[in-house]
Each structure stands twice: as C-alpha cells, then as structure tokens.
Amino acid sequence: MEQNESSRRSFLRKALTLSAVTALPTILTNTVSGVEQPATKSVAAGEKVNLALCGIGNRGGEIAQALYDTGLCNIVALCDVDMGAPHTLKVMNMFPNVAKFQDFRVMFDKMGSQIDAVTAGVPDFAHFPIAMLAMSLGKGIYSEKPMGRTFNEVQLMMNAAKKYKVANQMGNQGHSEANYFQFKAWKEAGIIKDVTAVTAHMNSARRWHGWDFKNAKYPDAQPIPATLDWEQWHMTTAKKHDYNKDYHLGQWRCWYDFGMGALGDWGAHIIDTCHEFLDLGLPYEVEALKAEGWNSYYYPQSTTLVFKFPKRGNMPAMDITWYDGVNNVPQVPEGYGVSALDPNIPPTSTGKIQPSKLNPGKIIYSKELIFKGGSHGSTLSIIPEAKAKEMASKLPEVAKSPSNHFANFLLAVKGQEICRSRFEISGPLSQVFNLGVLAQQLNTKLVFDREKKQITNNKVANELLVNAAPRKGWEQYYKL
Image (cartoon, rainbow, N blue to C red; front, side, top):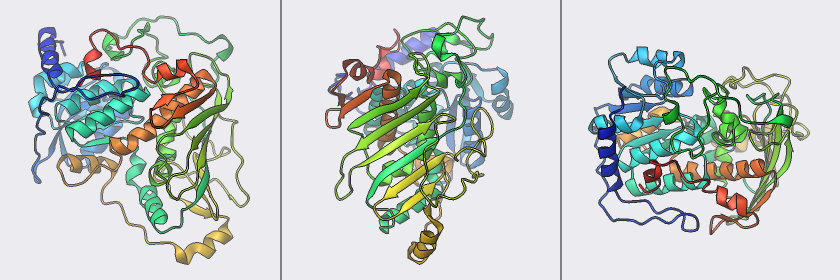
C-alpha cells in the first residue's frame, strides 16, 4: 500500500497526453488535442471481466458483493483510502490474495493493463476523478449515485462517456428492476400520459437530524485513524478539513462540501423512471419552498423543493415537488390507501423506515389517472382501488428484467448488453439533484437556462455549478 510517488508522476504525465473532453462552454473551456482514444480491452464471451474495486467498505462493500455474486467478474484489485479499517475487512478477507492500494492513481499505474472495469463505491465528491481516469484509460465504470457533487463534474463525466465509448453505469439499482420495465410498458401503452405533477417523498430520519443548526459550524479536529489516508480522502476537494468522525463513514453526506443530502441519496431511487420516460431533462426553475433548520454548513432538517419542467413534445409542462424531513410529509390524494412498507426498499443509514410515516416513493398525477409508487424497484399502482380494477384489463404485459443492475453493467463491459442507467441517462437526472442542492444551500429560487446551462438570476449559484478550483495536483482530471 506504499505510494510510489515517482510512478504516480510518470502515470499522470502519460494521462495528460490523452485528449481532453470539452467542458461546458459557458463554464469551463478546455482544448481537445485530437489524440486517438485508448483502446478498450475486449472481453470474450466466455471470459470474466477483470474488475477493480474503489471503495470496499459499507456501500462499496455491498457493491463488491453484488458484482461478484453475478459470476461475471474476477476481482483483481482493491482500493480504499481506509484500507484495513474494520468496515473494509469483510471484502479484504473475501479476496486475501488480491493487490491492495490506498490511491487509485497508483492502482492504475501499476495494474492498468490487467483491469477491464472499475467501481466507484465512494462518497459523492470522490466519484468524479475515479470515473474520469477510468474512462480515459478505456475502462468500464460503475459509479454510485449521484454521479458527481457538482453540475459541471457530471457534465464532464457525460462528455467523457460519449468520447471514450466505454460501459458506464450509475448505481441506482432499481433501474434494472420491476418499476423500470413497468413504467416503460405503461408509458408506451399510453397508460401513463399527460403527467402534470409528481410528488416525491422521503421522510425518514437522516444523519444530521437533531444537530444544533442554530449554532452550526464545522466539527473540531480529532486524531486521524491510523488506517486512513486523510489527504487522499479529500480527492479533488479544494477546501481541506481537519479530520472528524462526522465527515467519515457516511457522515460526509450531511455536509454541502462533500455530500448531497437526502435528495442526492434517495432521489435517484424515487424520481429516476419519471425523469427518463417522461423525457424531463433539466428544469427551468428550482425553488426552495421550505428549508427548516437551514444553515450554510449542512442540510436542513426538512426541505420542500419544486422543480419546474417545460412542455416536451406532446407532453404538458409539469412540476416535481420533493419532500424530505421526518415531519414534512406531503398530503396524499383521496383513495391513496395504506402506505405499507415495501420489503424491496432497503433501510436507511439510521435504521428501519418507521411504519407511521409515508413510505419513501412518489405520487404521479396525470390528467386522467393517479399513480402511487415506492422507491427503488417498487412498482406503481393506480389509485383509488376502484379505478385500478376498472383499468386492470387495459394494462399491458410487462417484460421481466433480463439482468440485475450489476450483471447489466458487466454484460455491457463484455458488449452483450447496454447499461440501463448509463451516464447519458443518469447524468441529466444527477444534474437535477445538483440544481436542487444549490437551491437548498442558498435557500432560494433559481432560474435556469436549459440551453446555455447557466443560472440566470443568481451569480453565486451560477459560479457554484463549477464550485471552487480543485486542489493543486488534481487539475488534470478536468482535462481528460
């Protein structure tokens, strides 16, 4: 796990000779060198994908297990900035003879020729550099949701995926489950049409709930765990923080500097099919209607956001209203019925979803019908029950998924399937969340130019589409 600085510098010099992806023309300007893209190593039909794991604890460890369980991959490298900490031991013990690294750059430098694909099961702010380097080297990338911490990083990831033509998948696993195929079939059959509003809700307790928001501040410095490379943990993040346990092991999600709150965590599991199959793209306006417990450090205790989308083809303009917070529960329509807990929805980081609260999910309002649905792969139902019975004979047959989300990615690396949540689809969805987080962070309304990809009514917010310049030594990931 010793970092070879000479080797790393050599690798980065080589990486910088690769052609640069054009950034947002209204935000960043990079040149394109025209260098031929690296060849993707082919994986024969009977071969397994050689997979490197970046992030092997907690959610990263769950991803590792799920990908390995498909039987479609060999695990050839493990990488984690906290290698050897208790939360990494399960995966380390599963693959005791696999090479281990604390720096993904050193991993690529030493083992790049042996790797077909990479995971980024790491915090929101750390997806970007791993994904960009992997794609520029011709490696498939499985990145956890949301794709990137800033709007511009997500745009660069989409550009790179298009340029390098490697398999790329965002980890909202419900996009390969029943709701995906049902929503698609119902939309194509005209059952879901003329949608005018969607209510999306996630009302379970979050990590930062109960914190003293009236006296909000960054936490005090604590001793850095012996296993943790705290410098490397920051990745491209410009502002370095002193170590505190309330940044590490999932706590990063609480802070605007590192995570994307409840919206970034659960939005991709709730809004994803609405966004794709209703062709929503980017909103023209996002407004924070409620931000209880607002402060400039971490997320509110409860938030209500409204995203406004224009008319698209023959589909009417529509709004998505997002509710989070334990007591910020939206009203439900008459005939909604009981919000039973869906066993397919995993528990939150703070424990089981409370039965007394509304099940995480969505309510879809169209001109003729109302649908209710849960999160992840949970299917929709028509409400009220009498209307559902009336429509039963008109509902189309729904195809079964040919592969789960993890197998879908590995089969795409092998050229046998196409990733269902590839960056061209999951990128604009992630950018919706990027804009929503900016509205939360500034507690305001943002007007967005969908063509120029600029915020037109708030200079500070527009600058935050890019955020601060990366730390010294990490600039090259914005030029790959």
